[in-house]
Length: 261
Ligand code: CAA
Image (cartoon, rainbow, N blue to C red; front, side, top):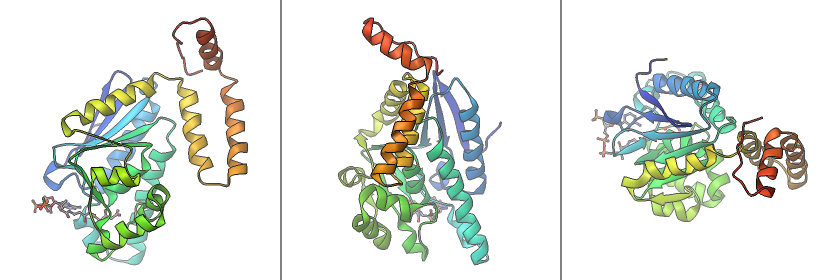
């Protein structure tokens, strides 16, 4: 598929989606969201891709939020609710994808951009990045899951601080509160994301997919139910050829060759 607002590239077994509207700091308009959704489908269906990176074009922004022109034009409560639910459905698609998704946050990750990064599995930020949920300054609240994923990541008090004040925080502060997982020098960001993606991409794909699912499902339920779910996924993964290969390779002191079966 030809894309206008994003770039989709592949390097070895890594798929890279780059938001490419640098003049508006990669703001997410309708077309960009449609293209993101299509790109995720495309990379999900590509058996050669085992890990995905999302990043922004230019040096200034990952994504500076939903496109405020479109927010300004929303004509009714129904249209706005639909706008939010549709965006949320695309972020859920990313969150529930069987392949891991890494956000390489190269600059502003604000509003919908911060929300998008929170739907990814791992967040690596450039030391120059700025994150926040500034919707309150527009007279609105986060609509792409920010009121829910932010407290789950950083705790209720810090989420309320960020959402109610609209304050933008540095990458270092985001690391301190658990909003991002790593901070690296800006010039090294993409390589750091690729290095991590490459490590994950070479693991047993079903083990990776089901470990991700076990964490996602389990963190939304109580510990006893979550552990029962984990046991079921452990049962499933132990029925794979990759389990035989991985354990045999260890015992035979050789590298494992996983097939995703
Ligand atoms: N939507 C549309 N255009 C945007 C944008 C956005 N979210 N963010 C930046 N832009 C545009 C600006 O309008 C400007 O365009 P022009 O050159 O045509 O004027 C261009 O990008 C560059 O931006 P600035 O001139 O503002 O750059 P700056 O360095 O002075 O400020 C900034 C940078 C602090 C990120 C500022 O652009 C800003 O505050 N942007 C808006 C951030 C925001 O509020 N995001 C939340 C959006 S709402 C949302 O996301 C809802 C949701 O939950 C889904």
